[in-house]
Length: 432
Image (cartoon, rainbow, N blue to C red):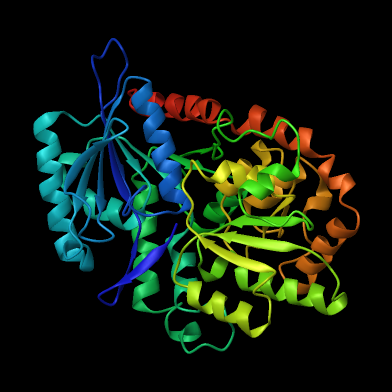
């Protein structure tokens, strides 16, 4: 989960989800879910995750209403997409805690006029905390979906993970960080169930929260295995259709362009590969948008890698599968906090071998396919070593394609994932 700067305040990205029962006999629930931005207004793993879950809950007969802050004022205040009812808070109100709380309060009143609330489904600590200040939610069970720690995200946003920064001493022990810690603790304490995308995320939580624990469950992210499918046969024709070179391997990645994704390390690894062997042939395609775009573009230019690395910007869900199928390998150069990685399982579902740094949930996913897919560490040199091994001897990795697809279908298919989430939703509303 990410936190963006608004009026001297880092706000998380949350969303409110609302599911309305047709009748108690049909076991349809009325769920209020909390996030900040939402898909398709903004692109990111947590937002895409909640959208995929919400869409499938609607398909199962639930009615879903979602409250989110607008990334820009271009978005309408209300609309219905894929059966999900979007209620959006204006950008001005998202710039301060007080205004945000007032907007949440007003939106809750609007929703409450239309239906009761059986369950609160939380995807963000700040919005959960502000919503908890409304007495109408005090007696309603809550499920917290843990995407990452706000405390850790704040450290990264302010450079606290780098030794020697001026914030190291004053912020970690200061009012801001302790306030964030307190907010997260209150959110955890008020939740009946906490859901994690990986064992890694669960371990992070256990090391952070010292009090009596609610019910803890690990349910991974998912992939639409009917949409992200392997090519019937690998050929150059798809590369030609996409305007890609056919005389070299294509390395593909889909990331938000922020520091923790490690894309600068991937670019530096490419530079090291060229220095090792100037005749080495490959092309790296980076899909995504974010605040680091200009910095990454400048780094590519400075290193003379314009012909080897392309920034493609954002692609639609409709466009993505063809790029996965045309690529020869997927690369995940994450530097820190990889709670899961939806793009990882999208690539696996397309039968594409994924090489990743040994960070967070990536380890759990790739170990289930082959240990060799993990780089030894997060450095550019380690990433270069792994890519070089693949370029010199691709067959052992391309032969993993059936195993990649099998894992995605058996463990990460969205329908299987939402089955498990739905069980937790129904269990949470049962009396103790």
